[in-house]
Structures are given as C-alpha cells and as structure tokens.
Image (cartoon, rainbow, N blue to C red; front, side, top):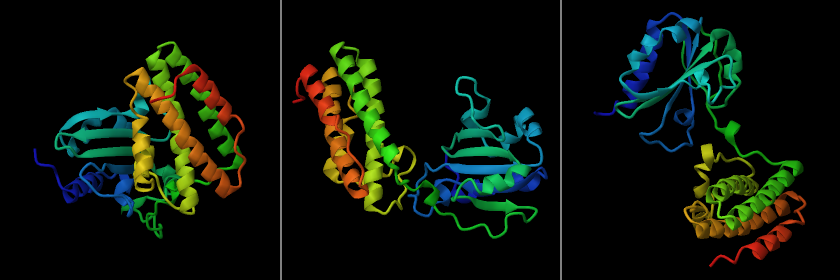
Length: 284
C-alpha cells in the first residue's frame, strides 16, 4: 500500500475537524513541529482536538474511520493494566495500513489555556473561534536537558552505585533475568548522567529526545560504542562485562559533571567497585 503523503494526512486531519462543529481547535506538537528534529516517514502526527463535549466522541468511535484502515489502535486512557494519569483527555494511538501513525488526543475546550501552556512545541492548525492568537512559534526548549541540583546529582550517583550491588548478587546466583533488569536500572542513571554532562558542554540548551534517542550525536564515537555494549545481556559474561563498562563510563561522566558544576562526588563509588571485584572476576 502506498503511504499517504504529509499533505494528504494533514488534509485528512483538518477535514475531519472542519466537518464537525464540535471540534473547535486543532493543535499539533511533537517532532513534526520541532524545527530541529530530523524528518522521516516514521514521524507520528501528534494531534489534539479541543472539543465542546468529549463523551459523544468516546462512546461512538465510528468517526475514527475517517482516518483510514488501522493495523492496531491503543486507547491508553481506557486501559486497566496501565492506568492513565490524565483525567481531562482521551487519546487514540492509531497505526494505519499505509504505515502512517496518528496520536490523536481529545481535550475539552475549557482546557484550551492549560493545553497552550503545556508545551513549547505546540502549533495551532485550526482555530474556529480565534482563541489562540499570538501563540509563539514552536521551540523545543521545554525538552532541553535541565541543570541538576546538587541533590539530584547525589541521588543519581547513589541509585547507580546502590543498584550495582543487586547485579553482583544476581550474577553470583545465576539469576540472569534479575541481574539484567537491574542492569537496565543503572543504565538509566548512566544515561541521565551523560545528559547532564552534555548539558554542561552546551549550556543546557539541547534536547536529547525521548529515550535519549539523539544522544549519539553528542557523545564521542568510542564512548558511544562502549555504551552500546552495555545492552548485551544474553549471558552472564555479557552482563558482567556491561556492569564494568557502566562503572567506568559513569565515573568518568560524574567526575566531569561534578567538576563543571562544583558538586561533591560520592566517596563510596570505589568501595562498590572493590565489592564488585571481590565477588566477580574482572571482565576480559
């Protein structure tokens, strides 16, 4: 199936709103409104319809057929296993047979002001009542790496080194799923520390993207290659090697952040490394 063009998708999104008087404002955010985001065919259409009443749209979902044949749809605000934290919106995440994807959110019209102030990447596509005049041009500053406080820095270090001991325990017991799960936890803190290090190098004016997906453009190639090795967790040997690599990378990144922000480094990192070395052989 031929993939519909951006122009065709935008016309589809807007025509639905034009034809329905209950839809008063159409907004878009995400990568398609971010001038710095790379463009490709996998970009979602992150759309918000601000409506006079949400209940009729939710109770009768035949209106969604306007957008085409779906492969799959998720309604996160109606899920039980993964309950939503939002009470004033209802989302439809739709993947279509032509590989286009629309993440469409309904919001009540009286939430317009909150919506306009919720994100710096919002672009208004349609405003039937002229309520959104003088909205600034989309910028990604809302998503820039935030400068950490001394407490945040300390907590990140503590979580990283504390959870490292769980990986040692899991490896010694040959509980690989347990060890691998805790490896993912310390890697999360490593990525956080890397983002702060990059922030200190860029005056905290860059966006790492969801799941740090743009981080590779800011890391030295050798560091990036080492980081990728920490995702190998299919054997005890790979998990152990990943643990040692995480230790080395974290110490280097934390030292750089502490130096540039005048933070205090913890005194237990080397103690944890000694504990690790005592119970696990040095990775080859």
